[in-house]
Image 1: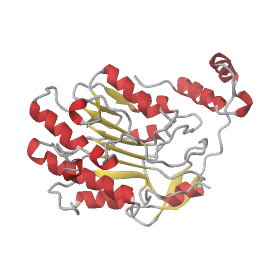
Image 2 (image 1 turned 30 degrees about the vertical axis):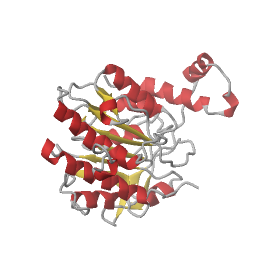
Image 3 (image 1 turned 90 degrees about the vertical axis):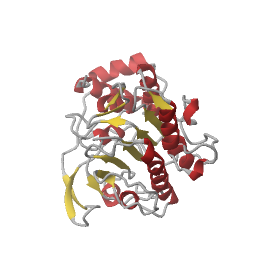
Image 4 (image 1 turned 180 degrees about the vertical axis):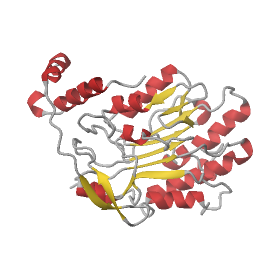
Length: 321
């Protein structure tokens, strides 16, 4: 069920008051009461001509979030997997492990997400896992784990998210449709999608999000994470006094993986993340390398992949003063 705009407005006001020193220490009940009588004033709508990261030409981009706390990009990740098959066969378990945690033994030999983000297995910069058969990955496969994932995403420590599983233009899910919608994620993070007719606040924007599932870029799911669903450049964020951020998703049904291609895809994804973490490759080039199998993994990223937000962003890019 889509969240009512009035409810979203109330949540944004309460979260804003909670961050204001004037109201520090007030109980939630009092903040709710203040929110009920508060009146929002929206900035005058306007546009800016900014470079388009994908074409190099100028494009008219709308005013982005007008309310956003100052934050510093970090390398803390939520990593989650939406169970893609109803069965838990031994082959499926191996597929899960190859894709997320890397291969049996030395993770770095078969890539994987956790094998790249947390090669020593210390779990210092990734969210807790719940699936011992797949390393420390968090598997979403019912309503309980869906709610737990939402709580991890809302934790202010995390600013990066990798998800592998089923997707749509407005949600991520497992095979049984236990998942999170755009509005549920927006509500948990306090990020108002740009299409909402209320003040545009991003109270917990994410730095980098990769939703590795079908159709995840076919709508504005990225805006749940405070990332505009359009290709921009770091210049656009800098001109509006915002920290740059980027989203990678797919505009169509992506590759139907099977066991024969699973390890290659795991390697390709590992190299994609290695490129990003190196600080020497921007987001769009990471995608280009994966689509063209620049690292000779035997797998290619689906050609419907797109980058929203700052496509020219590097992992070390800072654009907010």
